[in-house]
Image (tube, rainbow, N blue to C red; front, side, top):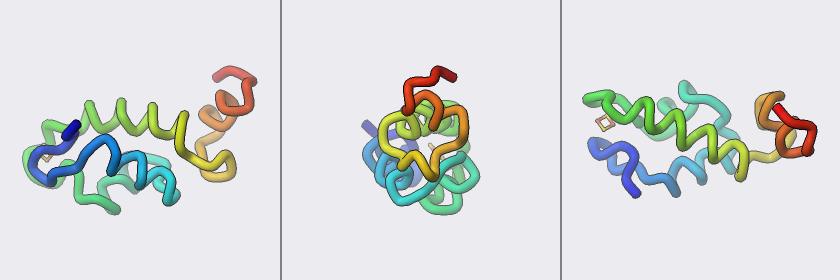
Length: 75
Ligand code: FES
C-alpha cells in the first residue's frame, strides 16, 4: 500500500528503511524523502513506522520502548 503518494513510498519501503536502521520519522524522511511534498502522509507514516519498528527493527537499534515490547517486557 502506498503511504506517500507524492514520493511513491510504500509500507514495504518503510519496513526496509527500518530494517536498515531507520528508527524515527526524521530519519525516515531523510532516507526516503517521505513527506517532502504535500506532507499529508506524515501521520499515516508515523503509524506505519511504529508498527515497522515493532516487527522489523533489530533490538539494538530500536528505541527503548519498542525494544522492551520485542523482549516481552511491555511498553
Ligand atoms: S503524500 Fe507524502 S508528501 Fe505528499
